[in-house]
Length: 213
Image (tube, rainbow, N blue to C red; front, side):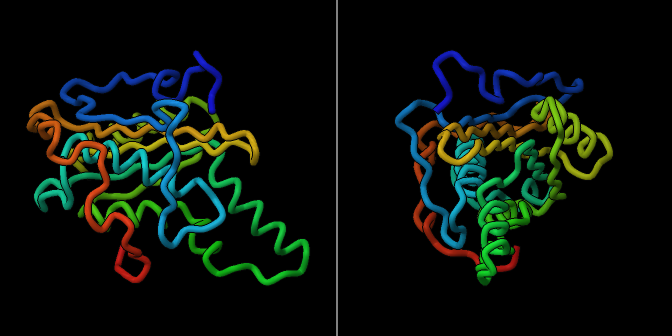
């Protein structure tokens, strides 16, 4: 885990938003040293996709309570995933298989595209707005929030789920992520605590690989 006092992505990135927009809900992983990622059905080898799904779904539960999101808001909610490192473990597994002359497992090709885990999230929550995946070289959270603001200002969405996920080198155990739901201040307040909270819902371990994303 990160050393005590080291700033994660939520602390290190600027969160200034244009007038009229606000952070409706947010989540960060790990919240403490006891946190462990739940395996994600259909994704193998790497912690990157489980990290993205975990922090995104925590954020969504804190605002919407339970899934799916009502259609009127779901179709106007974009998702923007940003990562400086990307999925290091999947890339390394593919490279190792190629270098050794072994067959590359098909699932690695599927999950090597970050749209795969974003599709997993949007299918479960009914988010049908634009999807953007980026890899800024620096100021990842700030740049992701800028991108979300542009989507909203251009009229492509009313709100955006911004996810920043960084997978550290194998063996370091320093993966970290943050998610923010950014939207108009006029949207209703977050769901009351207890509606769903951070607890998984029934069917959260269901494999959605064969469903449209």
